[in-house]
Image 1 (cartoon, rainbow, N blue to C red):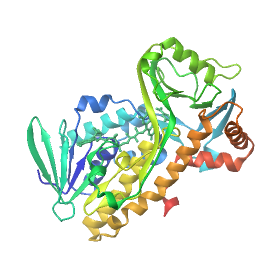
Image 2 (image 1 turned 60 degrees about the vertical axis):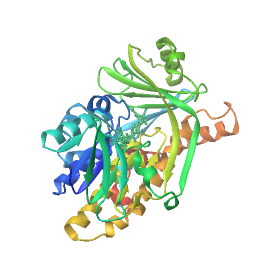
Image 3 (image 1 turned 180 degrees about the vertical axis):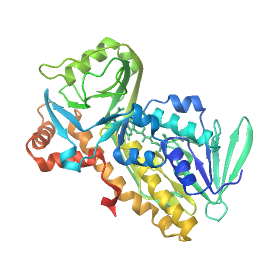
Image 4 (image 1 turned 90 degrees about the vertical axis):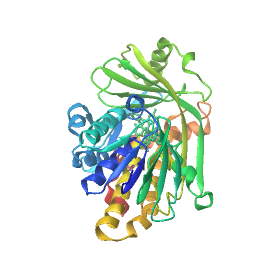
Length: 393
Ligand code: FAD
Ligand code: DHB
């Protein structure tokens, strides 16, 4: 297979990249390790920044998102049962977030790619990335027991945290930063209308809880659990009881309903400070992971793609390699911001130490400060909604 940009991974990053390049007349092919069914059923993120939604709209990929997504103009933060609302509009010139499941984004983008005649190979793991330090990089892959090769001008590794892209980067070309948190999230999907019009993030002495949603009949909720905890340790009743206590505030009730998905996710901050080598470029989770509190992971993946598309346009249409040369430093400015904000939200809202400890008092002080200070609330709002791209230039 010959193409201009060989893309590894049909997650949000790889699919968005393929569509965006196509809009600018640049040809690409996607190679995906898993089956289409597997990728489309993988339940993950739900929070889309306005930046992300705007990009999908510009690419003509947001029809269902606009119909079925839920716009939110504020968020609730709860601490020891006291709930406050941080509005977005007054602090962000009217910007907002949209709740729409990541796997729905993946379905929409995959459908549109295939309908538009795009090439995507499923169940085709990339096995080796070669010659990326020459003008003729190659992706060796396998499909149905047959070996194949993508010959391209550039390789875009959008292959997630466990992908081949990062493993292929020369070890001495980057510094690695990593922080593993001493807790995980148990996430559920349930057939029950959301009990709140907006998301609720809660600190409670029994641990963090988050109330999110997917539709008027499906809710998405999370609780902090121990790293070695197992889904089987939790009955549905226990999960609802715990959510109800942790999210609770006087005069409010949590509706429960049948749970149809349960999974435990570890919490990690990770990134490398170089995302390219020769004609190999990394984007999204391939280069960085943030803990999910604050919902930045998917949005950061799409932001990387924006910078990469700008760079490819520069190369193919303006005959300049400046954008490609500057890809890593350009992307890193936003990545650092997201790392800090995700760490801030995680440490603010999770139980990390004994209730009443010094650490707890610092968390409480931050919460109280958000409540009394417009400036601090504005900091939370503008990061949560996502800073405009111009902010980082
Ligand atoms: P991925 O989605 O991981 O896609 C990578 C793809 O590459 C995969 O399909 C994989 O199969 C494929 N692949 C890997 N190796 C190979 C190979 N060798 N050959 C071919 N293909 C390969 N983010 C948010 O922004 N908001 C949220 O609300 C949010 N909540 C989250 C909640 C949970 C429970 C979890 C787990 C994550 C959450 N995230 C959230 C993070 C978000 O899901 C990720 O950041 C996002 O999936 C990154 O997209 P990506 O395209 O970079 O990588
Ligand atoms: C969701 C996940 C998050 O990590 C978050 O901060 C907000 C919402 C969700 O899955 O809906």
